[in-house]
Amino acid sequence: MAVLLYPLVGLLLLILLGAALLVATWVFWQPALAWHKIPRAQKRREEALQQMAALAQRLRQQEPSFDPKTILELPLVTLAEKLREEELSLESVLCSYLEEALKVHQEVNCLTDFLGECEEQLQALKKLKKSERGLLYGVPISLKDPYDCMGHDSTCGLAQFLEEPAAKDGVIVKVLKAQGAIPFVKTNIPQTMLSFDCSNPIYGQTMNPLNLKKTPGGSSGGEGALLAKGGSILGMGTDTGGSIRIPASFCGVYGLRTTGGRLSYIGVASPVKGKKSVSTVAGPMARDVDSLVLGMRALLNEDMHRLDPTVPFQPFREELYSSHRPLRIGYYDSDGYTQPSPSMARAVRLTSRLLQEAGHQVIPFSVPRIEHAILHLYTGGLFADGGATLLEKLKGDIVDHSIKALVSNLSLPDLLKCFLALIMKYIAPRMGQTLEEFRGVGTPKKLWEQHTAVEKYQQEFIAKWRSLDLDVLLAPALGPAFYIGYPAKASDGSSYKSLYNVLDFPVGVVPVTTVTPQDEEELAFYKGYYGDTNDKNFPEAVKGSVGLPVAVQCIALPWQEELCLRFMKEVETLVKNQREPK
Image (cartoon, rainbow, N blue to C red; front, side, top):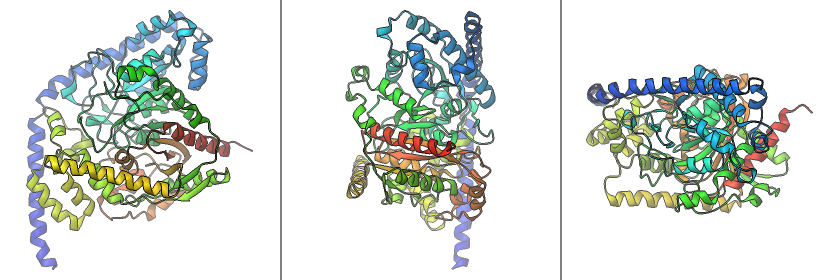
C-alpha cells in the first residue's frame, strides 16, 4: 500500500509546486496599481496625523491647566455625564484622546486616518442647548476603517479602494454624530478583513499593546489595540467571523456582535458584499459593559430606522437589561472542532462556577454538527462564488502575508481544487473539505440549497437550546493572543467565533482571567482533535502568554442584545468582585 502511495504523493507535490508558481506569477504581475496608490496613501496618513497633532496642540493651548490623566481614567458613563453637565470642556476631552491616541499609534501602529472635521463638529456641539444634547455629547469615538466618513477612504486594506473617498457619512456614523459623539480617528484592519491578524500592504502591521510580538486580532484589530491602551473610550467594529470578538478577547476589552439587521450596515465598506449565509454585522467595542450599553442605547433610536427603513425600529429594551431574574445558562468548554487552549477551558469553568454560586442554573451544552456548521455552512457560505469576488478586489494589489495562503488556495483552478480536496481528505480532512468548499456552490440551485441548509441548522440549534429551556449560553472565546503571522497557520481556531455568524446570534466578549504559568505548562500536552497542521500550530500560536487576558463569550438568541448585555454585566460583576480583596 505504501509503495502505491509514493507516486501519488510525488504527483501531489508536483501539482502543489505548479500551483505555487501559478499563484506567485499572479501575485508578481498584479501589483502595478498598488505601487502607485500605496505610497500616496501612506503620505496622506502621515499628513493627517500631523494635522491631528497640530489640533491637539491648539486645544492644549486653549486650556493649558487641565490634567488629561483624570479625563482618560473616567469610565464612559461618567465622562458623558460630565460633558453634558459642562463639568468638563469638550476641548479638554478631545485633546486628551487626540494626544493619547497618537501615543498609542506610535507604539502599535493602529491608526489609518484622522477625521479632521471633528474640530468643526466640536464647535457645532457647543452651540446646542442642554436639552438638545445626545447621550454621547462630546464623546470622542474611534471607527474601524470601513465605516464611511464623508471625504475619507474606506480601504478594507485594499489598493483598489484607495482614492475613492466616501460621498457621505454612513448611517451608523450619522446616528452617532446626532447623539453628540465626535468620531476622530479610523483604525487599522487586515487586508480584505478576512483574517484575524491585523496587517495590510497600505498601513502595515498593528501590534498588540499587551505584547508587541502578538497580534491584536482581526479584523477590528486597530480598534482593539487602541481601546486596550486607552487611546479611545468607545469604538465601532464589524464582525464576519469573530472580527469584533477576537480583538476584544486578544486585547482584553469588551465587544458586542449584534444580530444581523439590528444595526444598519449602509455606509460600511466590504470587499465581498451580498453574502447571505454568513452575516456581517456592526457592533460596539469598549472597556466595560456599561459603555457598550450606553453605545447601544445611543444607536437604537428612531434615527437609525429613519435613515435605513430596513432596520426595524426597536429601541433599547431596558426591562430586559435591568431584570434580576436568575438565568438558566447553558455552557460548553469545547466546540468539538478546535481543542481549546488550557486557559480558554479554565475561563469557562471559572465563570460557570461563579454564576452557579450567584444563584443561576448552569447546564452542560454540546454544539450540534460542528463540522457541518464550520466547513460547509461557514466556509461554503463565505466563498459561495469560489472566491471570485475577493480575487477581483485584489487585482493590481500586493497580497499581504496574512492572507497569502487563503489567496493561493482560492486562486487554484476548480479542477485542481477538486483533485487536491480528494487527496487531502485522506491526509488532512479539514483542509480537504475546505478546498472542496473553495470551489463555490456553482449554480443558483446550489446557492438556494446552501441558504436552506443554514436555516435548517439554525432551527436545529434553537430547538436544542429550547429543549434545555436556556436563557443564554456561555462559551469559550479564542485566546490568548496569537503571535503575529500565526492566524493564517492556525485559522481553524476561529470556529469558536464563526459559528455564531452562521447562526446570527448576538454575542458579547467579557475578559474574565489571565493566562497562568500552569496554563502555559499544560500547553505541552495539547494534541488537537485532528492532528493536522492547524492543530500542530495552535499551541505555538498561543504560547508565551502568561499574564495576557482570557475571555468568554456570552450568547443570546437573535434580537436579544439587551439580554446578552445583561448576561455580560452579570459575568463582569462576578469576576470583578472575585478579584477585589475581601
